[in-house]
Every structure is written in C-alpha cells, then in structure tokens.
Length: 463
Ligand code: TRP
Image 1 (cartoon, rainbow, N blue to C red):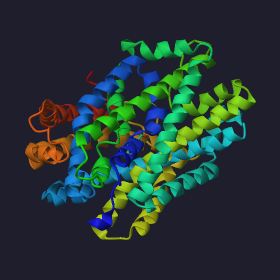
Image 2 (image 1 turned 90 degrees about the vertical axis):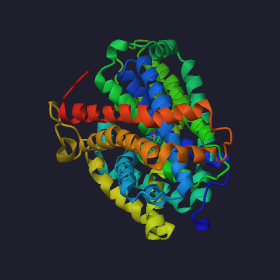
Image 3 (image 1 turned 180 degrees about the vertical axis):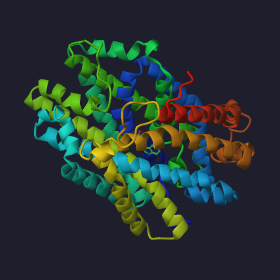
C-alpha cells in the first residue's frame, strides 16, 4: 500500500478536504439559494442539515476510507461486502456527472477573471451570449480541466495536498477582504439585514429539498469523495475533530460568501432587496455591473480578485472530483496514475460537452427535458445537476449510513474512530453518531430522497 501515497500531515488532509467542500457550491450557489429561499430561513435549515444529517455521514465516509485504504468501490469489497459495492459505483458515477458540468461553470469563472483583468465589465450584461460562445467557453473549460488533471497527476502529497495548502489560505484572505470591503459600501446594511432576517413564507417543499441537496453537495458527501480522501489519512488522525473542522470551514466560507454578496447586491440596488434576482445569474450577470460602479482602478482589482477567488475555490473541488474515479482506476485496474488521470480527464470533459452546449447554443440540449407537471423545459446541465446533486447524493448518504449501521456494524465504526481518538468510546458523541447512522439519517435521507424525486421529476407535491 506504500505506493498509494497519502497526506503528509493532518493539516494537509483538512486543507484538501475543506478544499473539496468549499467550491462553487459555497460562493456561487449558496448566496442565490439563500436569495430564493427566504434569506435566513434557508440558512437555518441548511445549517441544521449540515450538522445533524451530514455529520454522521461524513464521519462514516472518512472512517470507511481510512479502515480500508481503498477507493469507494474497493472499500466495500475490502470490508468483505462485495454486494454493497454498487454504492461505490453509484458514487463514482455521480462524481463523473458532477465534474462534467462543474468544470463548465468553473470555466466561466476563469473566463470572467480574464474579462475583469481587462476591465470588460460589460460582460455581465452579455452573460447569455458569453455562455453561448461555445468555442471560447469550451477553451476555458479545457484550461480548467488541464489544471485539475495536472494537480491530480502529481499524486496526493505532491499534488492535491500541496495545491490545497496554497489555495485555501489564499482563498480565505481574498474572501475576508472582499466581505469587509463590501460592508463598507453604501446601503450594505440593507443586504446584511436581508441575509439575517428570515422570511419563512418563502419556504416551500422545493426549498427544503434544495437545502438538503445543497448541504450534501457543499460538503462533498454521498459519493465517496471523503471515502477516497479518508483512504489517504494516517491512523493517528482524529476523525471527529477533522469532521468538525471540515464542516466549520465549509459552512463558515458559505456564510462569509453571503456577507460579501448581499451587501454588493444591496449597494447596486440602492438598498432595495425586494426584487433580488436569484438564479445562476446572480454572480455572473450582476456582479460585473457592481464592480464597474467602483471605477476603473478599484473595479478591475476587486472584480479580478473576486473571479480569481471563485476559480481557486472551484479548482480544489474539481481536484477532489477527479481524484475519486482516478483512485478507483488506479486501485482496481492497477493503471499508472498519470494514464488514469489524463484518460479520465479527457473522458469527463467529453461527457461535459452537452452541458457546455445546453446554455442556449444548442436548442436540443437547452430544452432537453420537460419534467412531468412542469410547463418549462429544463436544460441538460440543470437536469444533470438535479439528478446528481439533489437526488443521487442524498441517496448515497442514506445508503452509506444504512451500510455502516446495519452491515458493517456500529462497533466497527466506533473501533475505527477510536484509533487516533481514544476517548471516543462511551462518549456522548459516539451515542449521537450511532443514533444518526441507525435511525435519523437513513429515515430522513431516505424519505427526502423519495420526496425529491417525486417533486422534481414528476411534479407530485406532498407538502
Ligand atoms: N463541495 C463542492 C462545492 O461546494 C463540490 C464538490 C467537490 C462535490 N467534490 C464533491 C460535491 C464531491 C459532491 C461530491 O462546490
């Protein structure tokens, strides 16, 4: 196993796992979901999901990975449960699907960085033309996938960990500076108020499902990304402590992203938060206009910094998404790492082409499906994201907890956690985790999975 490599330090693992968690999900998706979901009402629900439902899932994933030192498919086999490796297979499939469209959005972020550097603020108003210009956005997507593959090809300590140790602290400095700056702008407080005052009337069943999907997506759970990273963790690491730190980093950065975004929006709308436009456009269509009003010098600087932040956040996430299928292919088929990395990066980029075309360029992919009970067609990219993020991840989480509690057994989970954390056995946190994996997670995640599928794809609503 020595040849598999591993993280060189505890901080390295936390940085890499937090890097996986913190991504477009936090900075791009979180603020607009908050905007659509009633401000603080959404935030409270999201925090509840992260700490109650996601915590036991994350602990289980890391423990399974560290015990077996294998990829998500091999891990189930190594524990002696061949029949359960379908969970790992489904995870790898979700990862491939997520990376295929995630890379497209990451490419937009990188492209916007280049536009900001040149002071082209008009790009905000041309967002829909920008995403339709497939040769250009495709090129940015290729650049992004190349950077991702380059890092992953260098291995765990020399690639994934090294990149995260540089990118994560830089990201924290950038996002904090931007949030402080945003709060000094006129009308900033109107944005903060919107963010902190819950509007419970906006909570619909759809918002609940989105908050759950968002929690899973944002914490990189439910597909074995943390089984994979856990497989590179040393035996003296404390899994509980790592889980707390990773969750806090992820939630913290999402929270700060909101503190940066809503003051900016309030500044632009002169304090009027009544018709804040949610949706993907919140960042790409709206922010360049905000940066423009800051004047050429400051605007270019702040704008470029913002999209650099977004690109860095995305990069540590694409790295983790690519590492999962790479670990699978390297472990199971004994392929050299470099071959696995470049082969898979090419393959996933190609799977992402329909997503690239589905933002207005190709009518077929743009109006890909119309869900039952909906009168508007859904584009391919949104479809893949609905499928992978909002349904496959919670299902994966549900199956992982079921497996851990009833097949692998709680005692084995506790044994693994206790390595590196001698006080764990008999503690309150042990009882809570057992309660989580045995009852709360399987029940809640299982029911929400069924409700989400019925609601999203079939238009059947229960609440
Ligand atoms: N968590 C990342 C984000 O918030 C996305 C991501 C990276 C992810 N790796 C993952 C999501 C694995 C699910 C599973 O942007």
